[in-house]
Image (cartoon, rainbow, N blue to C red):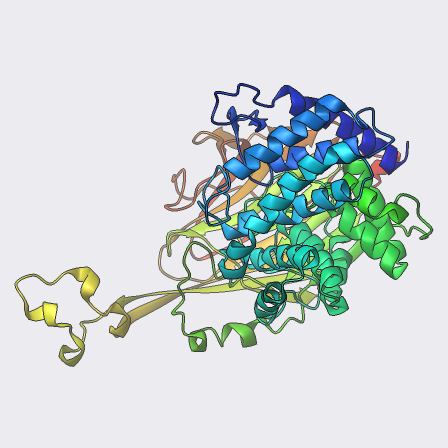
Length: 588
């Protein structure tokens, strides 16, 4: 079954499921909406009723669907369009269920999806569709004031809004829409030369930025907007584990450490493969297509894309082999320090509301693949190393100390002949009195609130610093991790090895600590999953703390805790079962 036939079949299943969950009680405030199975409420957001409307439109207009020109489905689509109009606020926005009331960016997600739905319906020569198409068009036109005036929270929201402005510009021709899009685009594109977006979100927001910029490039005739998409897709070829799972070990968003596949990249990769005749993009599209078990949320619905771009259903592009044996550093030459040095001059004082500044943007990440072994070396997150060997998964290696206190984020990465050196310097001081000439009037009043004092003007005293160095070396048998700190003062440190729950941990030096954690006091520990294993050597137990303040460990994992005191120089040996897992040659 090719990907088109697969998606038609999947979509038909989603069509029926949506019909089964539609609210048909005309006395309900949610009449016509489709219930979210997770909470029993119908929502107007891009993962709610509009997403299901895309399923329905893709089926009712498609001769290959068993719901083609289905009268009952047509009735349901009309009801859902009326639901969307009722749940649209007077300002043109919608409110998603999780947060962001009256949200321009969440409205833009819906617009970029329903505009495609409207295009499909309006372009299909079946007169009974006109009522549903007109209802959707009315909803879309009503969003224009919000798109013209509305703002965003996160970096990717700018490009989502830009794409929505493009769809509405295509529909109405209003020049103000293009002008507003140009305002967003004038901020510049936030993608490094190696293809990393600000949010470092391989599981979710990379794919969002990719697809909406493809739309914007087409709708505004801006082919230059495709350059970052190309870079990101090339980067993603190195962000795939052997089982097809996406690397999320360093994400700056909610996909951090969670399981995602390449499915959401299908449409972007397929479109770019066709446009560029690029074998690598075709290979990514093929892997993404294999991973798809759902048509997709808005505005990244794969079947909707194949219906709008029927030339994508077949492929004349030769498919490359995705790399599976490499050592690459992403952002190794990105001038991150130069950009960071300009932050003070930006004038925001390090504050941003309802979002993050993402100073970790462009931080270097190293990726290693050798067949079924996959390793990630990371800077600027709580974890600096992750390793997968067949079914055995070491999800994170972390350092927590009582200096800050909490996890240490390694900030610099230096390539060595057979590995990497990671370093971090933390500083912590004390703050003197505010000069009398700089005190506010309240300082001499009957009450002087702490929060009214200009704390940023205090002189720093007794500043201390804490330096950590990690050397990661790839060895004949696996990896070697050397962690050093020459801090002469006594400082509690905890080095943690977070293992997936699917594996079993064994070792004579392992003892219970807190929920989900184990002390690794001495000797070796082995993580076994099926016939694959990762063996660790180097346990230690120099203090009894079960956790360092501000450092928490996931409850759904098995975490080994190595407790050391400064100064320390610890080396951990990581040995792997037989290297050629694909051919079943394993050491026992």
